[in-house]
Structures are given as structure tokens and as C-alpha cells.
Amino acid sequence: MAIIMDGEVVSTSLLKAMLADRDSLRIRRIRPTVEIIRVGKKKDALAYETAIKKMFKKIEIRCLVSAYPEEVSQDKLVMEIKKKNEDNRIHGILILRPLPEQLDEYLIGKCLDPTKDSDGMTPYNLGNSILENNSSHLPCTPIAVLEMLSYYQIKLVGQRVLVIGQSAAVGKPLTVLLLNRGATVTTANIYTKDLKKSCLEADVIISATGKKGLIKKEYVPKGCVVIDVGISVDAKGNVSGDVCFDDVKEQCSYITPVPGGIGLITTTVLARNVLSTALNESNKQVV
Ligand code: NAD
Image 1: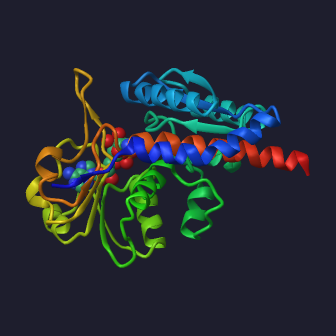
Image 2: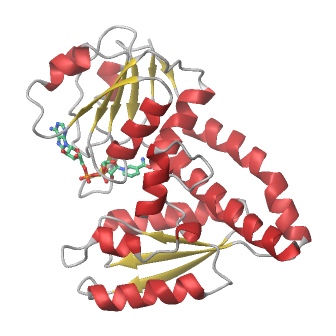
């Protein structure tokens, strides 16, 4: 039976390490502030927004939300983001993804000020992840996965890690960050021919597809570490991951639950990014 990796425990430990930053901002009377940019009213985006607000309250980060209609134009959104780049009261900007089809995620990311890019989506910050510059903001979910693995002292050097999913927000940056830590990484996608075979060769499986039940017990080698990033919400609002949790936990050594796993750490990492930007900006003013 596997050890259940607890997102709450890891999040609490990260929050504890962030208290000194919060206190120094308090003393300087600076209120760390994030601006969430949401296009449309998708259930997933609203749920993520609620989770962020709950987390940010714990660490005294002010959360502003700018909501735009689903059909907002590229030009309008770019103009709005540029205004927020210039607003000194805002320390971090989070653009909720995926964006509707008429919006070009690359161009939207490109107009965001990299210093305010709380989810590491700009070409500048993503490029820095390849160059192993860890002072940049890196995408929160891949970092949340690494925080979880680190807390449970899971070795990465020389380990065969399978990342399933290759989005710009999760799978691709996670692949790079794992390579930077000495893992031997395979990245699978929807076109992968024999996913079961790739899974059976892995020491660590990280699934980020949003396909409920994709990872079954027979896919998982004995003693493997299984990290579930996927989130699927059914019509009744029930949340599930990519992994058949009850079966797979009998087979692996460590496993993350959904909910209660990576999601909680993601919002904590986001808060850490906002605090660090606010602190860096206030240090510049002191100098
Ligand atoms: P996405 O839709 O952009 O990408 C999904 C990826 O999965 C694609 O690369 C696709 O090729 C791959 N895929 C789909 N079906 C597959 C299959 N059968 N076999 C192999 N690969 C397959 O999604 P995303 O933004 O990367 O998010 C992935 C999942 O993670 C979603 O469920 C999302 O809600 C969740 N998510 C969770 C967190 C968190 O903090 N826990 C954060 C971000 C995203």
C-alpha cells in the first residue's frame, strides 16, 4: 500500500517558509497584490479563482479580478494587460488558461511584463527555465510537482520519469525542469503509441492530461511513484484525477490524491511568486 502524498502538509510547510517575506512587507506597509485575468466563466476557471482567493487570504495577498466576456478581442485584452503592467500597485498578474480560440496565448504572454508574470508563462521566463536560471518566475504547477517530490525526498537523478501531457503550462516546462534535475525524461502525448509500455518502464509517472481514469493499475510498475496533476470535474461537480487512485495505490510506493494533492501546492507556489515580486520591487525602492 502506497504512501499518500499530502498536498496540505506540503502547502503548510511552504507557507511557513513564506511568513518572513509576508512580515517584511507588512513592516514596510506594502500590500502584496495579484490581478487575476479571467476570460469567460468556465467552471474550472471559477473553481481555480476561488481556490486562489482562499489561499491568498491565508498569507495576506490582495486578490483583484478582471473578468472579460468570452468573446473579448485580442487587441482589447493586450491593451488591458499593458495597463496592468504599468500599475505599480499590482505585483503579480495571473492569466487563467486555457484562453478561448480567438486569443493567441503566445502573443498574450509576450505582452505581459516578465517581472509580474506570476505563472511563468512569458517567453522570457519559459526560456530562462531551459537555461536553468532559477531567479525567474517558473510555471506554478510544474514547480508544485517538484515541491511535492522534494518534500517526500523522492530521488530524481538518474530516475526514469514519464510525463504524460505536453502543454506549455504543465507538461513541457515540467519536462525541462526534470531534465535540469538529472532525471531521464520521456514525455507522452495523445499520439503516443503504447502508453502502457512507457508507463511500465518508468520509476516516476506524472500524469497531466485531464483524462479521467487514464492510468490504470496494470500500467503501473510495482514501487513506482505516481503524481496526478489532472483535474476533471463532472456534471455534479465531483473532482477526479487522471489516475484510478484506489487500484493504483495498491501497486505503487507513493501517490498523490485528487483533490488534496498538487492543486493545493500550485496555489501556494503562486502566492510565493507574488510575495517575492512585491519584496523585490520594494527592495529596489529602498536602494
Ligand atoms: P491541455 O489540455 O493543454 O494538455 C493535455 C495534454 O494531455 C496534451 O498534451 C495531450 O496531448 C495530452 N493527452 C491527452 N490525452 C492523452 C492520452 N490519452 N494519452 C497521452 N496524452 C494525452 O491541459 P493542461 O493545461 O496541460 O492541463 C492538464 C490537466 O492538468 C488538466 O486536467 C488540468 O485541469 C490539470 N491542471 C491541474 C493543475 C493543478 O494545479 N493540479 C494545474 C494546471 C492544470
